[in-house]
Image (cartoon, rainbow, N blue to C red; front, side, top):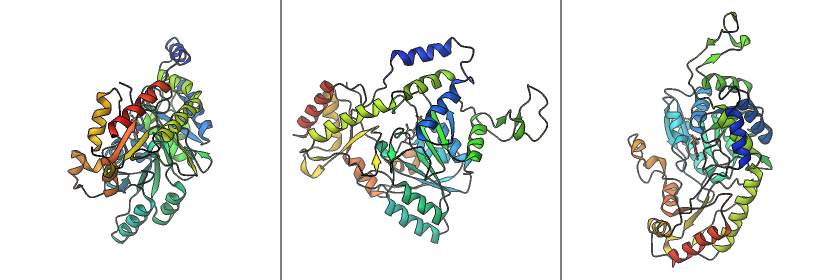
Length: 385
Ligand SMILES: *Cc1c(COP(=O)(O)O)cnc(C)c1O
């Protein structure tokens, strides 16, 4: 089966990890700050805090922005469940903003309408978590302008998007947001096996993120309430977690960053072939907006269901029976049983639900061969006949 995504590990990556295994520090050593610095200079942001997953980093980001019981947060219904779960961990209440039918990112007009309405009801969100679906940036400038009018904080869930650009700048520079989150899960753009990172330009948020990452504990005398009593002394200032990344993960992630731009070139080259080869089929290929350069984490097509006999599920089953590991990203979160218990219902976010009935993720990863890509194309053409 050709998978929909696949990590790419070379001998340098392996050597980097082995070197850490032979060193004195396999965790809390020098590799984590080194990895953080590589990501920082790549994205041109000021502070980075690596964690053991993007999910942990999303949770820490919500906590650092003081999300808690009695607060509301919003996100997109078309994302991985972690984008919404992170706010629920804080005891806050979730709601969703429907997607734009063209980019599959949060719809600016739906957001604007919902904000206006919620202001009247006195139910504005404290945080908006936007998701750069497939690696293509949301319209951050407009979202940022709305945040100033309505007074909410912005977290970019850029799990799909390291290496992507918006208005000429790297996603993660946090020009239009408070915090940006990256994931280094193996299926994403670069991997640390498991891992995530929060980047921000706000020193105070970075300080809070570091505390939350490690039990709420500091060894920095300038942050202590009492006198540092010696080398062994630390203070717990708040409740925190163990969300630390270890040095094996950081070494792998740091070495992978060297190849991120090569990975992106390969992803774009493969996407160009799909765009060309699928042109005359009853489906929509991913539209690229002009002021964005996608990281192309996912290549998603939408079937024109009116022009074919089968439904989406049938097409996926045919593909999978023929060795093509097609997938679906994502099941609308509000339709998950756990979320329905909050009162969400089918019909609540119609664009997201229509998208879900039509979407197929085709295999796309840097080491994908031309032979395999043409197998995918041929099988898709046959399935649509
Ligand atoms: C993968 C993913 C996450 C979670 O990342 P982990 O590093 O596995 O915790 C969160 N949000 C989105 C949009 C993702 O794709």
